[in-house]
Picture 1 (cartoon, rainbow, N blue to C red):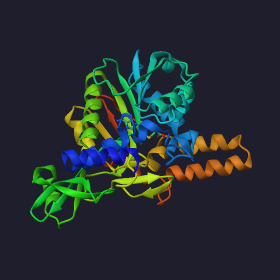
Picture 2: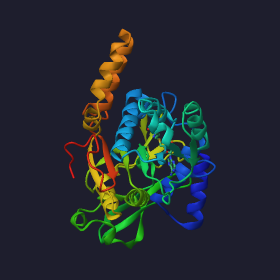
Picture 3: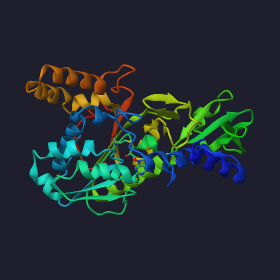
Picture 4: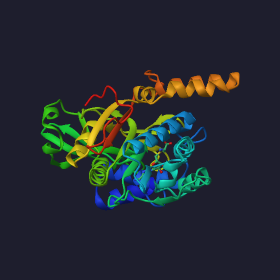
Length: 365
Ligand code: SAH
């Protein structure tokens, strides 16, 4: 057993089965052995790769998107530029470089990186060592700030702990993690029937069905939307997920670039779940902001100019580099199962007075 599995087993022995939420939260964020606390999970030697690690174009285009939104806000000064869960800092370093097309933007901005992992904070510090604007780190998003906000979150919401509910013979119950013998875990269900946790339209289904919610993601998006509704600005959330609430289990573990069993090796494998963009759009609107999307990542990147950016890079590239650029373009935008273009979605939350936010020409909502 991993050190964290030993701790989780002790907790279950003394307190009874724990919710899937607690299992996921502990696996990812335990202060001693949590997955994100103890390692840099990204890149070839890590467990998974993300869009900014695939190509510089991703962060550059998002940087230009931010500059464009700032201009549409009439260039507020100061403003808060925030990224949630910046990983190695690659996206932000590329975004800052691209934003140098408009030096006023960088002069007026101050950058805050919201990150819990000490190791990744250090990677981000190195990546942004030359950034020509003040950079600060916090563990949580500051909902109380007064300045207009420009916020980016790529593959952040999928790492927040979800609740799972299972349809049993006499109703919906919370899914839990229980001990399975001496050295393993299995799923179980709680004692209390919780019908109202599942949308009415999805309740009447055969036993065994799973419904997932992510209260932390809803609270976070509500806090961001509330801040935007009060002080202006926009937020861009990119993640893999579905456009409306749906049944189905999406909790998954990944280790060494391969799927892993969810209840094995706690703290040593990444755990994520699909983002329910429909539920998050509702939280943002309830908090007084407007929402665009979600649209497929491929369509979003095309709308904000990835093809033009590809052509510009190709003009000065060697034949090997041209092949890499073409392959990155394909991975980021193509619809197939091994690419991110359709599985990943982009959603913007913005102040209701802001018009013309780029990238969402044919929005679904
Ligand atoms: N955005 C980056 C990294 C995605 S991995 C990229 O696209 O490459 C998820 C990131 O979120 C990591 O940096 C992780 O340490 C951070 N993270 C996970 N849970 C967090 C939490 N609850 N609060 C703050 N950061 C968190």
